[in-house]
Image 1 (tube, one colour):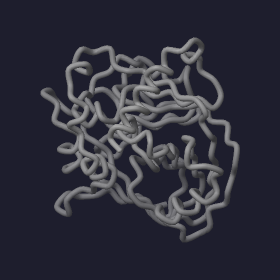
Image 2 (tube, rainbow, N blue to C red):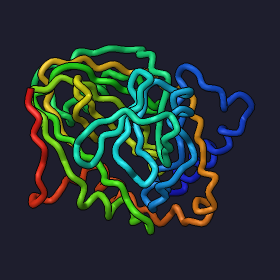
Image 3 (cartoon, one colour):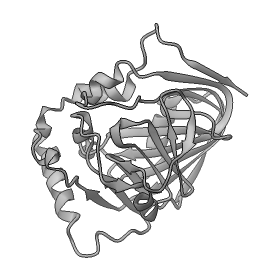
Image 4 (tube, one colour):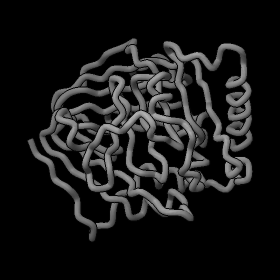
Length: 272
């Protein structure tokens, strides 16, 4: 399986240099760096928020020094900080890892009350035509409950992401309106990005959000847009060429996706 992932990664890198592949457009996913690189602590990039906005109006990621969770929504880029506060970032802000697309939904589905994250995954997997294409996903509506997390800004020498995730704060929301946005990615992209579902959340008033861990929907609508092309921008830094990406373990990636804070750390409760 690892050889297959490496083979796909090589194909993606090759495709990134084909004529015309660097042009933004409909149904193309544009990604900065790889999840494996982020897992190893490569938290500094040279791609700016303004460059991301030229590539898409919908996306997720993080910022240099792992400074919070990113949500690119309708052309605006927001940061959910480790204290739970949401701010719109400046165009020159840089990212070490992000994934964006021009979101023009192809399909729309109602998400009935009581559906949780796992039920959404099952339902959406059944709704979407194939598991072989990446899909940009957006969920808009009211949620009975949402649990999110963010990551604190790191100092050099940067620790691996798996270590950071062990102490990250989480936030809880009840009866809240908002938007979840992100991607569902095929298994063959594991390592390049997070295979499966990866969603970030913003409240309607843009005062809270984060990486989605759990939720229960009240009344929401799911939209999805397939991505038939992928441009992968690899880091220019010498640190990328000098790391062993094979050191990243799949169990560490899964742990980072689902890790919640220790019970001793407080959460933030937002209720509307």
